[in-house]
Length: 410
Image 1: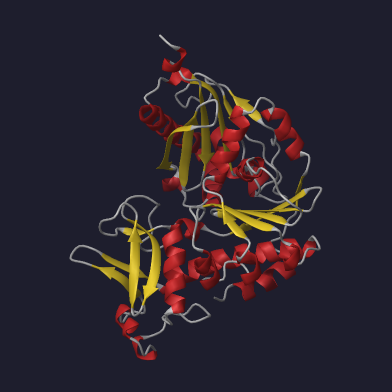
Image 2: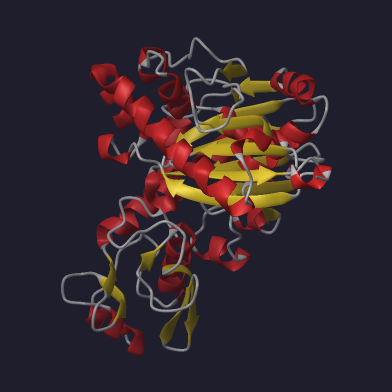
C-alpha cells in the first residue's frame, strides 16, 4: 500500500465556552476535515464563570467528563469526514480560555475565580491519553495561559499571524473578548467580559451558526432581507446575523442611538410593521416560526459591544497609541466569519477610523494551532511568543467604566 493511504494527520481543537471547533490537517496544513459541536458543559452554566462556580462547589469531575465527551464526539466526526483512522493522528493540540483549560484538567479553579485571578498552571502542557482520552492515541498538547482572563485561545490566534506592524490590534470575540496590541516590542493583552451575545447566547431566538441561522440582514427600501445559512427558512439568528440585524434596525430607524426599540407610532415608514405591541421587533414570521428581537436582546448586545469597544480604547490609551497609529485590526472568534465593514460601523463596534482597517481572520485559533502543529520548531516559537506577551488588566478601572458607558450607543 502506498504511503498516501496513511496520511500523517494533525488535530487542532478550539475549546470555546459555547462551542468546540476542530480541524484535521495534513503535513502541509491542508484541511481534510472541519467541524464544530456545542460545548456539552452548558447545562452547568451558560458562561464560564457560572461553570467555574459549579466546579468550586464540587462539580469539577462532571464538567471535565462532559468536556471530554464533547471532544470525543468532535474528533470522531472529523475522522469520519476525513475517512481516516485515529492512529493516523501524529500530534494533537488544543487551546481555550483559562476557565475551559482548567475544567478540562479538573484543576482547582479558585486561583482564576477569585482575586487576584492568577492561574497557578500556565505553561504548555501535554495531557496523557490515560487521563484525557479524546479518541486518539497521542497526548493532547494544551496551549499556555497568560493570566486569569487571557488564555491559550488568544495565544493561538497571535501565533497564527504571519506579519504585523506596531499598532496591530487583535480581537478574539467570544463570551470573553480577548484583546492584544503589538507595540513593536511586545504584545499588551487584556480582556473584556462581553457575555455570550456575540455568539447569540442569551438571545431569545439565538442559535449557533449552521443551517437555518440568519447570518446577514440588509435593509432594502422598506423591508429586511435575511440571508440564511444553507438557504431555506430561518430558524434563528447567529452572532453575525444578530449584529447585522441590529445594524439594519438602527439604519432603518426602528432602534434609536441609545438602543431603545421605538413604538410603531414613532416610525413614519412602512418598516413600522415589524414592530409589535409588546415592544419587540418581529423580523420574520411564517406559519411555524416567529422570530423576534426583544429589548433585552438589544441590551445584551449593547453590553457586549460596549465592553469590547471600551476595552480596545482603554488599551490603546494606556499604551500611548492614538487611533491614527493603528496599522490593522484583526478580528476572529464568534463574529470572525467576516461581517461587512458597514455592519461594524452601523453597530459602532469600533470607532469609524478603526473599522476601515479591520480584517477578519476566520477560525483564527484553529489557524494558529495548525501552524504550531506543522512547523518543525513550533514549541520554540511558542516560547518566544510567550516571552513577548504582557497582561494588561483593564476592567474595573474608572476610565474603563467611563468609556464603557459611552460605548453603549450606536
